[in-house]
Length: 279
Image 1: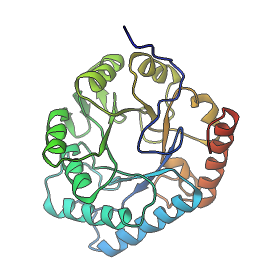
Image 2 (image 1 turned 45 degrees about the vertical axis):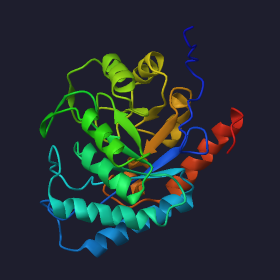
Image 3 (image 1 turned 30 degrees about the vertical axis):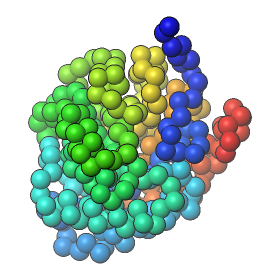
Image 4 (image 1 turned 90 degrees about the horizontal axis):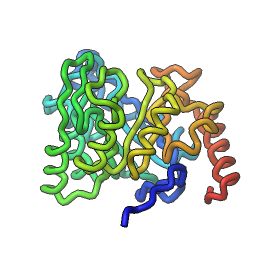
């Protein structure tokens, strides 16, 4: 008998203890081995910790770290100094955290991210081109689902895989529905991330509807979440990744603004209460 899928019923992400968790983004300063590295690892760690503390004090349900300021990005990071520094910073955050922690190693270093997650003990990774090829500024991003699953098996690791579909800052080759089905059924992603065309850009609700209709795993809003559009997306997503909105004045390159975080989380709790979910 075919399992019935209720389109708008919440799909719980098991590593979180709340419905529709909010995952705050920590954008790291340029790391060693990248063009804009300023030869001060301690400053990078301090900056990350300040953002971490603001996000936690603001009430987020999870954290994701990303090497966002390493622009321009490589397709895959092989530089040992970059991987070493990223691992150290993740460890410093992880040992202080009481919420799930994830990592995204841009542009498509999902295998390396999974290795770090398994060794350091983070809860999930985000992968931009998990099971579909993408044309991006870095060139052709090749899917790496098999390699990620292999290293996860090798290291006996429980970290979840949150896979972007038709990821932002790229020209997708596969149709959104097909990419979502492939990531879910054949490549074994644990959740799917749908974003706008660029960082901070809102997502077309129709895209969320289609991904949700043709899959049965959690769907995550990957960009464009703001205080005023939570209601638009509420029934269509199972989690929110928030980066730009949480920054001071909404400036993606600025520090996290605790007041923005608190206001957003108050609205999320209001929606949870309205729909009868624990806050």
